Length: 475
Image (tube, rainbow, N blue to C red; front, side, top):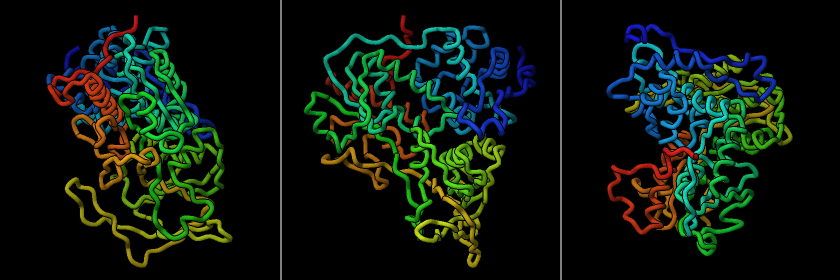
């Protein structure tokens, strides 16, 4: 196909549940491509000599190569190209904010719609499963060294994936009753079906990974206990599971529940109904997820307060679009300043209008309160979803160096902490970030731990590092 013909192909759009179907269930909203759509979308790729899409992918997936193989009919080969670099393609293809990463760097996006890279990656995984093809990498021969992984989120899953495929004995400890960390308790099932996460853990168990739930490191066991139990190295992938507070009067009233706490309760099976009118504070994906979950659990008047404009919202445009389709309104340039109530329960939220002031180097403008613009909103509940921070429970009795942000301070190259046998990555180091960035750090940590266990230089020939355990399918 000639370049002009490729440029004429419109971006393919997957089928979606209608808004009325969505808000009555947690079923997956977006369907995958069928074969014809996948091939047609793959034809849109220009196969750039300098693929900026790959630079935009935190995991550095070989995007042009898997797309080339897909459109040539080698779907299985295309899948294994992705597996050379990614431990969680079924997950990343669904929940990564592609518009800010690979697709945001696609050359076609400069004068139109970028190639739908995420949907093409998802198609490869879905095709392999539907056609009963093996999707797992071969396990390595067992070695006599043990690694403890604290946290069953994407970073911990990735560390376990690569080290287990090298033969190291890995045990994952998690304090939740469900596995997957923020993949499970932070992302609703309508975006990431739980069977996809469960299959990843089945694969890890198949390579000998031990998984222990409902154990809180720092309370039930300490890091020193793990060392005493024979673990030669420990990875801390504890995430950022604590909500940041608004810091306004009335935040302790009944009817106030913070975003991460709310999503955790919903996603482990509690069906909370917060009342008819729910106000959500924030502009990121957590705020969007909170609002859409509130709709699905019976609140029929849900809206968001955001202190900037739609242009500045950090949430995915696709998620904002779905939110608006489902009937959630967004009150821009507004922020809460106090929560009022009666008999210990909130009934009103006092807000103030904002205007955008000076902009920083990135172009993001600072919201400034407008004097005398206060107004009241009646509400049954308010859910602040403004950010998260790291819970330091796991660090009890261990003097680990922290940053001023409260994240773990690690070597930027190796992700080794101030205690040599402890490594860290994911949101515990980055703060709240994307799944792909957590996966990438998991790969770095796995190689660092391997070198640490084998007595090798952690930094030598870093530019030549290859992900351990990847690229070879299980026979």
